[in-house]
Image 1 (cartoon, rainbow, N blue to C red):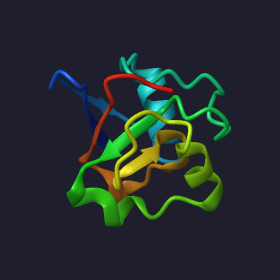
Image 2: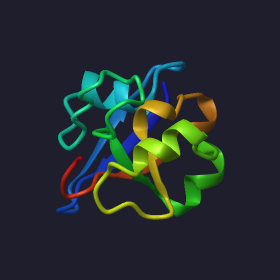
Image 3: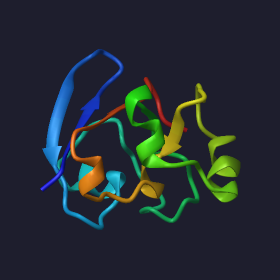
Length: 106
């Protein structure tokens, strides 16, 4: 199972096991990772699962879709490496992925 490390705004890291085919958001919710609210349940409709993808992983996670970019307009403190975790599908290539959660969602 791929492992994903979530680092919160205070610097605390939590590594969780994820299932192939689920999203980074689903892995966070299933494992009780704080900082991922996911109010819309993964429908790309709320921007409360905003994360910063570690620079080393940006290529592997791909580019955000137009719809995702539009939703990121509603997120706080958006950066060039911002993504909605509900839009990042987990595959073997993402084993070891590192993402950071912002200080606040929304």
